[in-house]
Image (cartoon, rainbow, N blue to C red; front, top):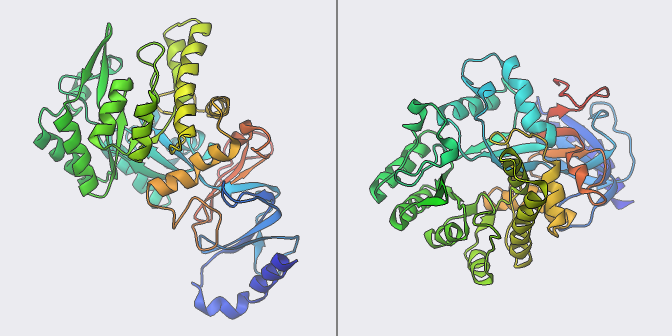
Amino acid sequence: MMKRVVLLFWLATAGCASSQRPADADRWLLTAARLYVAPDEPPMDNAWVLVSGGRIEAIGSGAVAPPAGIRRAATCGGGVITAGFQNSHVHFTDPVFAEAASRPPDALQQPLSRMTTRFGFTTVVDTGSDPANTEALRQRIARGELRGPAILTVGASLYPERGIPFYLRDLPPALLRQLPQPATADEARAIVRENFEHGAQGTKLFIATPQGHGEIRRMSADVARAAVDETHRLGGLSMMHPTDPEGVSAAVQAGVDILVHTTIDPPKSTWSAELIRQMVARNVSVVPTLQLWGYELAKADVPPHIRDAIVTDAERQLAAFSSAGGQVLFGTDVGYMADLDPTQEYVLMAHAGLTPMQILASLTTAPAARWLAGERRGRVKPGLDADLVVLGGDPSTDVRRFTDVKCTIQAGRELFVRSAESDDPSGR
């Protein structure tokens, strides 16, 4: 009853407070069958969220009808609300995003929606694409020319000297020559600075790269440490592609912030208890990308039973890391991986033992904290940005519901609204 009274107070005082708000502030009400304020707080049933000027003004529970002047978001109402999701591992390398600075918005909008906002992502981390092209895409989103997520980017990835991985060698020779392969610490620092000058908020290092036939090329410790230190000096986060447990250990020693994968090399790959203890003690986050492994192994025609066993090894790494208190960040490697639907990632994370609320944390509170954005996003709380996801069902009963997205809202603006006829973006 008290929360209903609070809402009535907020609505009734709209006129009194109008002189203190921007004249063009859009004030509206979103209702929900259930509201997850945060993964570590009890949900609220029969709930509502009051949005004003792109921020959350109030939340509560109890059915009320808004008075004249405050619209009700009927299309997005009645579902399950959470904070907006973050995909912490994406790439804008698909040719459909090429020439993002000049292509017509209509040519970019649908693929952007299908890859990101269709699945509730209000923030994504680009972990390696053409920096200039990604920056153009980000700027067009910021200007309102495209409806898309906030993009954090690492710019150009750094590779070991003469260490481009075998799976990238089919790229055009001109592009391959542009991939940074620093031989010295000074070269690494200079590359990091250049990335930040062009809009990067972090750095991605390939600390170990497969060359084929079992050979792995490794980045020297001084180069890795220099890149990480320079990234931290500039206020960013360092991300590491580890390849194998030795690469994970090297990343920890270099002071990396985020591992962008679990590992499947060598066969029956495991992370020792001591390695996991060091990772947790040094606040290293992990993006599991479990779905990627089955995708890659299928492309290589690995028999299904062997694929399953390898993915299970990666699940065990995630389970051990999470059980030890490690911070997990949701990510799929979409863009490199052509499968846009992240449903299987949720299923595999649950199979590894993560609860629905731990998975929700990996999508919301954990990445917000990791990127020092917890005062702006990650929870459904008054004063935070109105970055919201409306689901058609409760993920606590089935993690597949995380992809049952009715609406994706960022800063109070609808980025995706599922139409009644299909799952295609409605264009609203």
